[in-house]
Length: 499
Ligand SMILES: [Mg+2]
Image (cartoon, rainbow, N blue to C red; front, top):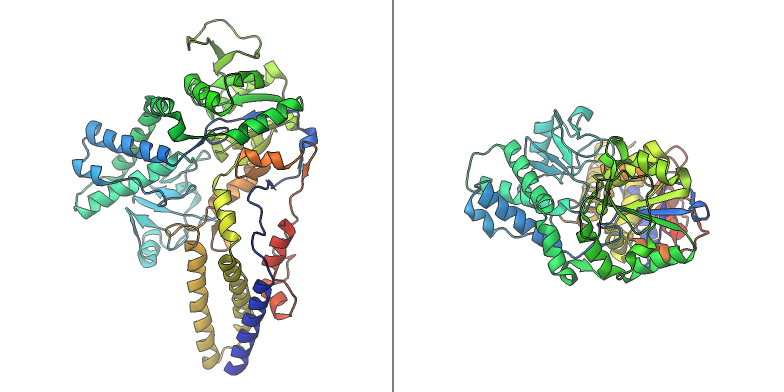
């Protein structure tokens, strides 16, 4: 029996090689817009934007700046050890969408079914063994009541906080560095206090305006020049689309950035500009009225009856915005990078269309286009299929072979993770499952893309059609197609369709 198992193995491997060698790379387009839900730009009359990481993109230096300032606040204001100054920001340590167990001080990736992805649990800067994770969580499932609330915030009773913001990359790294320091020096500390102190220190970098002042003082260092953002806004204006901005950032900061990205007349492009909106509260809290800000930043006290072009408004709420503009329903498309604070309420409660800006897409797709990745995925699917079909052979010899295949599969699964990020893998997948982040993305965003500039590749009559991905009961088993000698595995068929 074992010789026929190995014959099948060799045959599948050969087919994998044939398939991979017939495939040219660069199959997936990193500048494409991907659809979760059918949506036509033809019907879109009004375009809304978030500012940070939607219109404005920041260089990695900003993360270093946030990390350094927050670390120093911890030392100087919260009396944390001076030795923490030795820690520098580690750019490739964390990824977005991770969960942090506030009480156990563990950073980890969780999948769409609330399972921890083993191998992605970190205490400080070091991985925790699978055995220890399983012992701590009595398995790897995290019950719903421990997960953070809808907006990813850890509130009462929730021990798992999800980091959804690009700005939270330095926060996760700082948490890990401080944990690392305490453990290395055998210092007894309360993880809940640490979490709150780091959160407060990071918050202070924003709230006290330290980050805003630093960026304004050296804009070229921190903001990536947005030639293509400008081109998108111009294209929409030329096509007579209405445009508005709703951002949590203050006016001076946005003004300096937009002057740099678009030019002095940037406000001419927008019909309504709202700053310090306090999203996601902006979408839910009916009580906050709009307030006009004059060009010197002074707040005016008059009641707002209209939202006028050329004016700047602070706070307010979406209900008032809808009443004053009449911009309701699916003719409005709003872009943002924060899936919860920017997009969730709009899609769930208010019926606007939503576009998610996910800058990580570009680098992940480039990795997926490498021959190494295509080879890994094709062979992984082939081997998984073989395992599935051959497990029926229960004799001892066959089981030995199957055990070897399982080990080989484990090695490959690890490589498919590490190819994206050594600690946490891809933003979108935990091995084969979608991540918790992916699941939210597919629920809250009609379309998603790496940057706003992807819009330049489509005309404004374009309809985005989601691909009809087979549900599990509709799909033939991946490996069957390889074994049956068809020319393409479903994985490759999938990339061919995207091409
Ligand atoms: Mg943003």
